[in-house]
Image 1 (cartoon, rainbow, N blue to C red):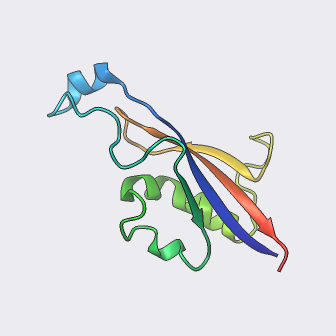
Image 2 (cartoon, rainbow, N blue to C red):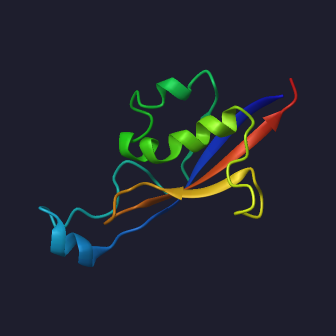
Image 3 (cartoon, rainbow, N blue to C red):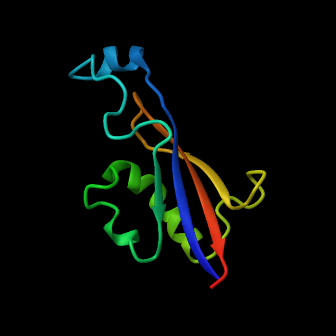
Length: 109
């Protein structure tokens, strides 16, 4: 069995009140790196290359451990989500978080 992980950008949120209160540039807006509906396919082969301009480093830091587990065939969220192969996660930008769906895809070799 071979495993891949599909990352889908579900939402780019914006908390204007927090940006206005705390950011040096209160007009920063939504995350400029991702777009809603954008998809990435992660394999064992490209896992270590995701930061070569393909994925935001802060967001990768938040999701990479779950992706690594899924690439090994592990459950991402057993008992927490309706499907243990799916996880909803987000980056740690508190004023403009990006919400991701991580989905383990199993393929017969």
